[in-house]
Image 1 (cartoon, rainbow, N blue to C red):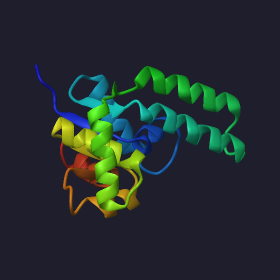
Image 2: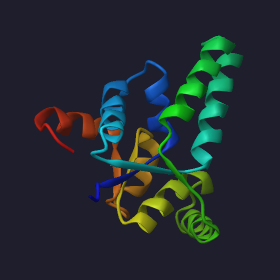
Image 3: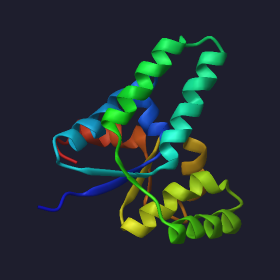
Length: 153
């Protein structure tokens, strides 16, 4: 049975791990993934980006090293389907050049275009910059509102 597919970025995965605005919506996506109602996909970059944010929060004194390590282990357990492709990386470079936006963020978009699915982000700046050109870029906050109105994805 084919499930709907959704690309997620690190801003969504972080909300699985740390209490912050949007966590309820992010956890709803994770539940759909774990219940095999939805396939979540992300480039391997997601793992490094989440680790970098956890490290930054440790350095700022916002979380302890132990909390960061436990969160990272949890991420590895809950990780979306991780993908990599030189061709998609090249597409991300082209998107970045065309839109003057960081390659790392464009990599998630390139994967959504490759998979012909939506990209869910909690990064409002990225959403604002890309949604008009790429309607597949969806904002987690809007998913939370629509998910309250319906019982399925």
